[in-house]
Amino acid sequence: MAKTIITAALTGAVTPAGYRIPETPQQIADEAYDAWQQGAAIVHLHMRAADGLGAMDKARFLETIRLIRAHKDCDIIINCTSSGASKAHPATDEERMAHHRELPGIEMGSYDAGTFNWMPAGVFMNTPQFLEKLGDLYLERGIKPEIEIFDAGMLGVAEYFVRNGHLPTPCHYQFCLGVPGGMSATVENLQYLVSHIPAGSTWSAFGVGKGHLPILFAALALGGHIRVGLEDNVVFGVDESGKKIMATNHMLVERAVAAVEAYGNRPATPAEAREMLGIPAFDRAAVHAALGL
Image 1: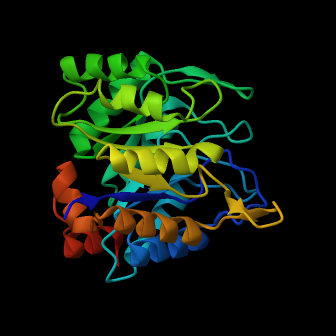
Image 2 (image 1 turned 45 degrees about the horizontal axis):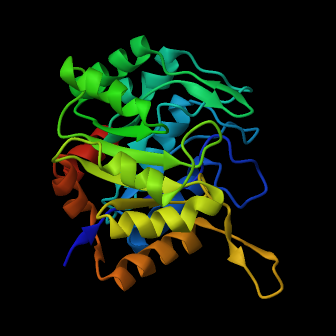
């Protein structure tokens, strides 16, 4: 039976307050544990400052990681963003990498492979200089890059850094579709991207907002993995009267597990996902010791 990796992206940096988003380290850790219990293999972490807005807060990353790992039975893969700042809490390139450089327990890190106009908010800046430094840091620290692709040209950017020794292979791609300014969340666009990555790569996908379910089901059909969570989608569906049903992370992960099983696959365990992605096996004792648990 084929195995599908489910990533739970719980918070994000730009989803506004009011959508049952976990914001504090305790809330995020609690929902990460719940996602793992349901069948998610990876949790994708963003932090929020005390005012609820996105922030690259190293102390909050550490606290959240410690709280997740305080659950002695939880072996979920921890994937931390490198792009969680906001206008209220801007971050330098070094601040975007500080937690990956200094904190224990991070196994994956996002690698947004290009700069584009995130409409209408502004420019999502990922310079070649930053990407080179970030890739080198991931190589040095043994962190698996999650290469986030918002538009087709970013595939060439990633290929450049692979060719020049700044990204490891095989690559793992996360296709991020439906962001205004990037590729729209269509099955056609997903098929194009999947057909243009190197053989032997792994990939996952999500669609923002209304693109959530079409991309989820298309990813399953095309043999990929899936990401769900309130970072990308806050509406679960509509009721018989047409009123929106607001989502929770629990609801979104639960539906993802059901979709994987209905398709005939099985949600990958964290141990299986590590093997599939080339991430070292989870050493619970070493991680707990490094975190002082």
